[in-house]
Length: 123
Image (cartoon, rainbow, N blue to C red; front, top):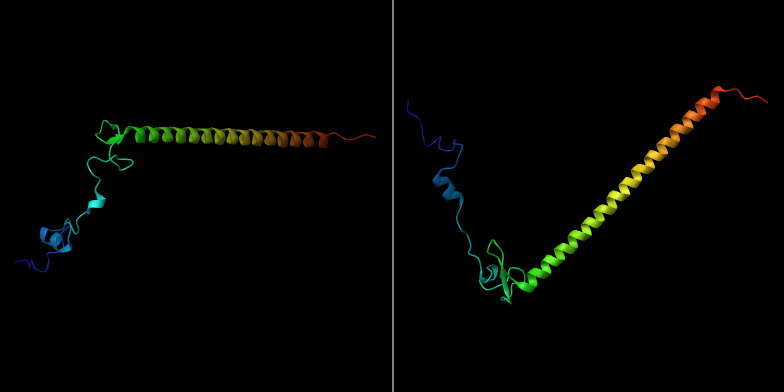
């Protein structure tokens, strides 16, 4: 008995060309405007025409002042984060030491209570 292809055309694990075309898959619906594309002679950071241009290894072109300012701000941010991380580590270490001291004090008190409770008191 022959299969009815028109009834079973949607049981595939993938979309056919016609199904993709009907869904609008991979088609360009609208074009990008002029203001959404950076001009060729514009800096990647400030989007203004180049002043003393510099190029990275990947081919991105920047103004020398913009890239140095950006790198300096990143360096300061990294130093700030490292300082915050160091203070947080120091604080955690102090809290851990404090917990150990309290635990040792509790153990000594418990030991003292146990030993003094066993010895009779004489008047």
